[in-house]
Length: 313
Ligand code: NAP
Ligand code: GLV
Image (cartoon, rainbow, N blue to C red; front, side):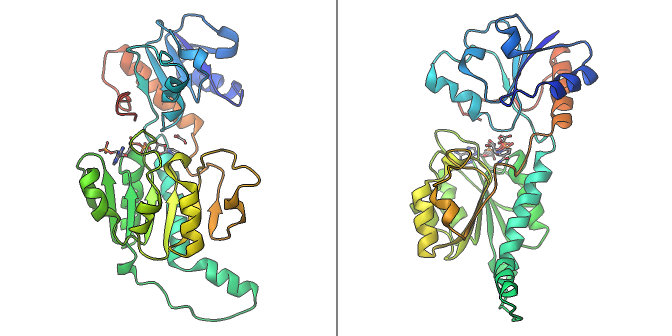
């Protein structure tokens, strides 16, 4: 069996060694060196369009992340970029849900417990009580309650916050009030004190966080975006922060990454910026999951995480 790998940073050695350990029967090839060689599986993150176009040899394409927009976007460059009928398989948690829940919980608690205001007071040598938020008024909404979002929502519910979740189809998540579809969107959003975005990037969700959406949140609400930068109309968010409608934002993802040096977000103290680290692809967990799926496919068994290409996630 042959695997062909593509990782944009060119650091192949640990991936090749990892696969050799858990899937010793497989030969691992770097795409740059093996080019058009016939292989069984591609394992990729944001591959170039030349890698997948016209491939009739592949039995599946494994994506080294949860979001597959980096593969599906290839169709914008070339409508025949993706080989017909070859399943695209995304990472299904693989250690990301726990990381996301930590990141979002940290952002929520920092806001709820007014830690930035206390840090500013401490910097000025001030010892002073600040009226706390009421937990019952601190409603948190999670947009996207799939693998990652449902774990985030359950984690936040354990702190006793009122938590809402929104998905495309009806869903039940313990301790979470759920809404779905376009019809449920307004009720989900109304009065939220914190909005967490963990949607996949699709034609339906691009630019979803705009002035109209932000206007439905509570005054002074906080936005946490851990999904994709293209979900946010940046000028609308900046205006909402500057007007005070949005009290602050914690942003892990941006339309352009790295965030350009002159971008106005860098100058806005109420916006916290991290460099797309809220849930890293963990090599060991990812290799173990892909190897297990390759074995299952070999035995003709179904696997989780097969992308619905028309739906976009
Ligand atoms: P997932 O399991 O596929 O869940 C996606 C959720 O979004 C589902 O609940 C789905 O609804 C909902 N959804 C999709 N389109 C919708 C629409 N038009 N309206 C309402 N709800 C919609 O995906 P996941 O594994 O949780 O990952 C989510 C995203 O997180 C990824 O696509 C990626 O962009 C992002 N991510 C970011 C990082 C980072 O480091 N920043 C790391 C990993 C992932 P249904 O349940 O009805 O299908
Ligand atoms: C990271 O952004 C991922 O989609 O896994």
